Image 1 (cartoon, one colour):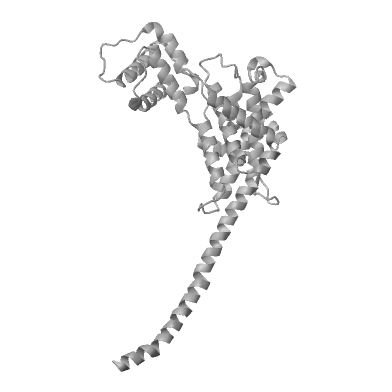
Image 2: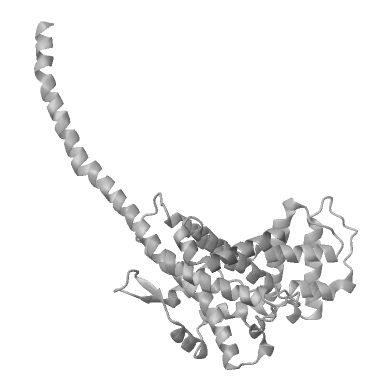
Length: 352
């Protein structure tokens, strides 16, 4: 027993020494480099956020003021309608409105592309901006609200009442699928382009879809064919969604490599953009143009859903600017007029 105790007393210092040496190696060569790399990664993400925050805010600010002018100031958006003519001023306003939206899409795309080289860890600011970007992109790409509007208006027209909440989503999707199937690859032409008998068949299918959303199913219900023309108008609502992959393509086309600048990319200037618009217009540019051109901002055309889309884009832009400025008093002072505008837009939304 005494010999074992002496052996332990002899070996213990050596074991402690070995353990200390191993621990030192682990701390120095493994843990410390990992902590430093993590700090560097977070610093890189924070720097990237700061580099893009200001240009994105300025892009959103320009878009916000233009949308507010067109939608909220009576008569100011008349330049978007085809009846406004093609004077130099009207052409400038049209092109610059499209340009301002493309700038924001391009800046978001630049930020996304740079994030591809950054591991998405626990972010201090970048997550704030990425969430804002997702909301903006969804506003341009998500047509669910229009699908529900069509469903509700048809159900009301045919005296069904409100479709039960649990069946609304499926009914709205089935209606869109039925319209797509009938129109094939020519959805842009609308239901009005179908022959009379094809319209009646389509309306019969849609009537059955809505009827199926109610329990118990009423087999005795008959569609009031006197309302067919109105139903066709509802189904022919014009909508212009810019899907997420399209937004990525638009953003890529807007970017110019900038190896000497603080950011890898910058968006093309207005001059180059105007040349593109007036020249052989690429398809991505035409898709953005469809959101604005030949548009009656008064909303008097009930078959044109773009008023609702652009109002939502205005509110979303205001919310994003407000979110990005909320915690930065210095930026709020620098953009005080825009901050006040976002508050007015939010107040009008809450009072609606």
